[in-house]
Amino acid sequence: MQGHLDVPLSDLGRKQADMVAWALKDVPFDAVYSSDLSRARQTAEAIMKHHTCRFVLDRRLREVHVGIFQGHTDEENQTLYPEEWKRFRKDPVNYRRPGGESFQDLKDRVARALTDIARWNTQGDCDRIAAIVSHGGAISALLANMGHPRKSGVVGNCSTSMFRFGGGKWEMVKIGDVTHLKDLASDLVEHLP
Image (cartoon, rainbow, N blue to C red; front, side, top):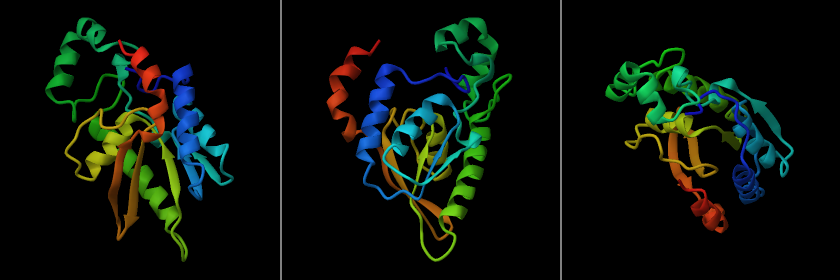
């Protein structure tokens, strides 16, 4: 569980970031917003190589802070923190991990960021197009805020999802597209546990 640990992209992650950047190179972005954590920021910087637009780092787009669980596998957390792990598994949405936050906290944090992004992108007489580079948990929080029935794991690393904002609400257009990563399929299989 990485949470707020500032882990940079792996070699595979850098390849994926370059591929998503290439796939998005012709989208006329007016802004790119990114989590300030290295793994998201490096992906956003790859996207920015093809764009000259506003670039904003926003801590509110960070992954969920998993507190004492950070830096440990699920198995390690079950052994190290058995009571906390049971509470988390019993109520993964509302349980606030010691030193961290709950999924509900994450949903609220992401909602505030998206409200501000939507406000900026709809100012004036034209709509703007923005890229938002974040993390699986934060994107799952966005989807949950929109009433999407799926849980975490909906989006893969460097997948793309598309949303429209209008009439005061977000609309899902596309979720978790990875077609731009198809050439990495053999690399991905090699990295499976």
